[in-house]
Image (cartoon, rainbow, N blue to C red):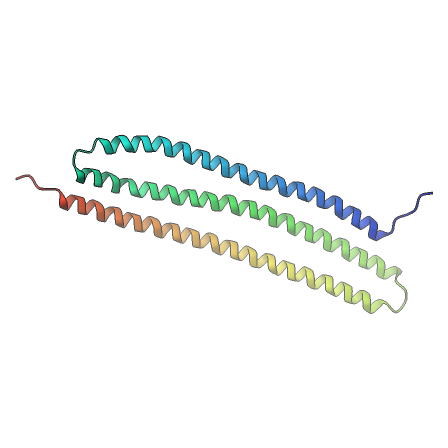
Length: 197
């Protein structure tokens, strides 16, 4: 004969099925992030190899040490800008992957919280007299846990935004420092060039 399952067993089965779907989604998001990272690295390697060949040919054509130094200083800025752009791409990939994980976790928490609240509500309707205080305590605990988790998510988002802002400031400073160093090197090379008499 068929035995009806209690609501807690049904909720556990539903939760387990949702976990499987969510884990597949997280695995897909992780793989998508890895694909983006691999594509970025392959593009950077391909471009770097092509540019290295051109740079080597330019440097071999230099007639004097000053011309060689001048070429190197001219190449410093684009190289630094590319390194900064690469860092920004990495940060974007990491940020989008983390955002997908956070979104999935927030959805899971909302679903779990709703399911638990429904279970407690259902249980409170069928609970024996005198357990009203216990049910109120359980509902309060669920509300407190949900609020705490939301605050943790908000803090994590703020921390991620601050890290991205700091990365942008650092990248700007690196480019500025390289520009100053390249200008200084180029001026030094020009000053070291003997004048024709």
